[in-house]
Structure formats: C-alpha cells, structure tokens
Length: 149
Image (tube, rainbow, N blue to C red; front, side):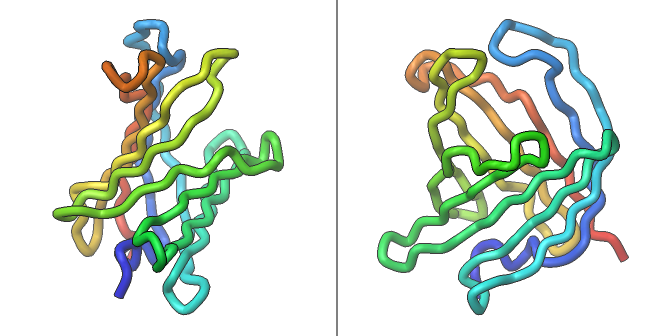
C-alpha cells in the first residue's frame, strides 16, 4: 500500500479558490468539479484527471521515487498542454506536504501543496504560494473531495 492509495477512484470536489493571487485579495470563487484517479506502475504512482465546470481539465501524474522516499507531483492543464514544474515531498503523520517553484505573473514563487483530513471517503487538498522566501504563505485554493458511490 502506498501513500496515495486513498485517492484511487472517482471523486466529487468542492473548490474554493482566490480569484487573484498574491495581491491581498479576499475574493473567493466556489465551484464543483469531478476527478478520476487510477493507479500506475503497480501502485508506485497514479494518474488523476480532473474536469472543471468551464470545460477545461487538468492532469496530475504522481510518481514515487523509492530511492529518496519522495513523491513528485506533475500537473498539466488543458489550457497550456504542458507540465508545470513538479512539486516534491512526502507524507508524515497522515499529512502530505509537497514543495515546488513556479513563476506567478512574472514573480518567482514557492508553491506548497498539502494533503490532509484523509479518510476512506474524503480528503482536503490545499495550494499555497509564498513570494517572500517562505516567510509567509497565502493559501489560494482548497479542494474538499468526497468519494462518489
């Protein structure tokens, strides 16, 4: 059994996302989406395809590196058709924490994903960004996922 086995299956997702990032905004949008996750490489990874209400979709490929004990999370959007830089991390005490680097509106930022509140039928994913060397973080996206019957 691997860290992300809980995620295999079909999910309904309640999204809460800031409309603008790293500008002190408190304007949130909420919407639903669906996700299908299947294992690859005998459980050492998975593929997650998410469909958003505006017709766009995203794809995450998660791969476990047994040499380092870390996961790489690789995200692509149907908008661009290319993978963003990966986030790397692991699980500890039931919480998955993953970090990566990206450019947001021309500014280099540190990205953090958290997976937590994990049960057999639900979990929470959070995305946060830091533009000040990880001194402060702005959480800009929450996904509360619920397993579909």
